[in-house]
Length: 164
Image 1 (cartoon, rainbow, N blue to C red):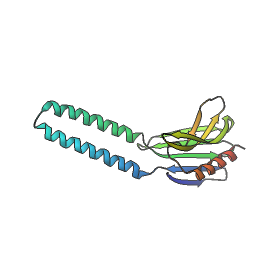
Image 2: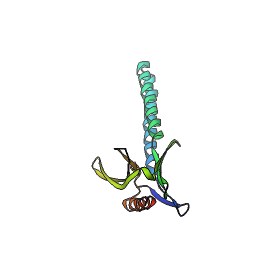
Image 3: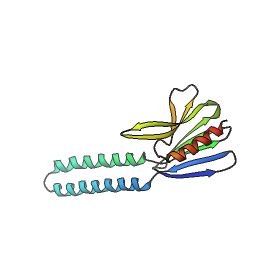
Image 4: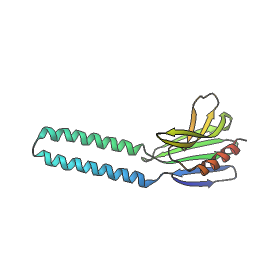
């Protein structure tokens, strides 16, 4: 569960933010660095014995580094929903690399908002869901970083008030 923040900008604009746990990312990064160091040590030891094995390990190590970089680049560190009463709702996702993905949902196009329950692996999870007019797919918020069920209820109530 992430750190939850509620920011009120004015009487009509409220932002709900959930910031991910940095310790999980740093633990994964430390493990990945350990594995890379281990492969580097094996490369140095085998360098003496075989150039062919050395070349294969170099390719494996570069592939591993590329995968690690891509994984951390795509790691989500923050999710937020901004409710602009009478105008719409903006969802935002921030990634580890600094990139952001924003999506604005106009009040007129939102048919329903609800708390969506889904199964992920062996766990039951919840997220905020929006059903848009003319779209048969749900638009989800807080499906990666979980703010807690009580906070989801608070966000849900504010979203419902935002287009009443």
